[in-house]
Image 1: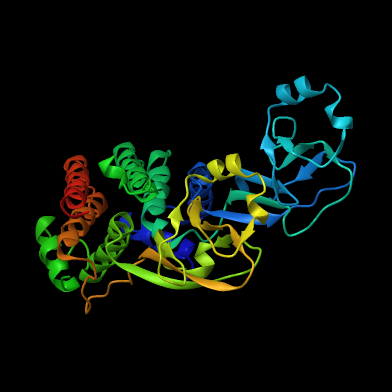
Image 2: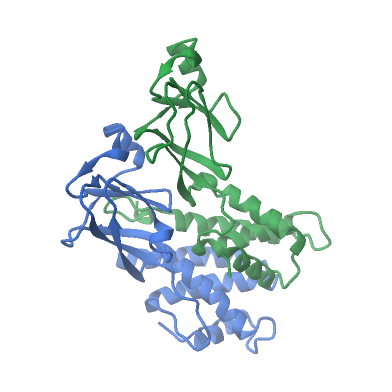
Length: 192
Length: 195
């Protein structure tokens, strides 16, 4: 049984089978997408750099890009203004990319600088990112179920219950905060 | 470590449902099971380990593939049993070495997490060798015939969390905020006592 099924089972249990099963998939996907900034589901994917093109396509499941590498070198994330200050004609400069900007393209692509002189698609051309997954990490089942319930009870419906929705959201977010604490070296987060 | 059925009985008394009429005993045990997984995810009292075979030239590994039951990496030990140093955020590694992805050495010196599902063992190695990853473990699904696997003091946290869930389930909302506060206080108390 997948963790998505576990979440649905738990949602049905906590809602006494009142929750709308037809909307579950939408609420679930929405909650999983909000996990992006928390970098729960991190992964890597190979990236293709086309010769002579600044544009680089990113994986479709990407939520939050953490690092981009070109032949093993980590690219710096620059703003569009910084690139333009470096060189107003930055898109026409060729070489080995060492920077990228995510401000000039849609969310699933970036532009690199300089544009690659040669194509590259090796094992060290990577995007490191947090992704949207259908099957979440198993220990997130309870907090995700609470956040799904929150959405279901907050929407307009015959069983709308704003207070219930807010309490589910409060508890779900609290559990995520507790689970997210990553201790600094030699310390536990709650003692800091 | 207490029997699940005993915890369910105590829980039913707490929410004034001693005959399991609002929620069956099996469902209460299911909520206790999720509670145990989350509480151990926070406290990491139940741990596990896995051997990771390092691949020459590779520094990034997918944690959920290596150890599907890992919640939180506690330590990484080399073949001699020595703990690798915990590196700071990966950004700090990039400040030191922009080519950390391809760095190699005779032995790894440190590790860091990238988010919650990628582990970087730095630098990469030239010859295959093993490291041991110690982690806070996802506790097994609790069933009525089983007992919790966390220390006794953690059972109180599990009960508090399960009580909140049952209050939500029963739409008894007025005490929920206080119950959440009790759960948070319990977690702080448990952490301050023993770690």
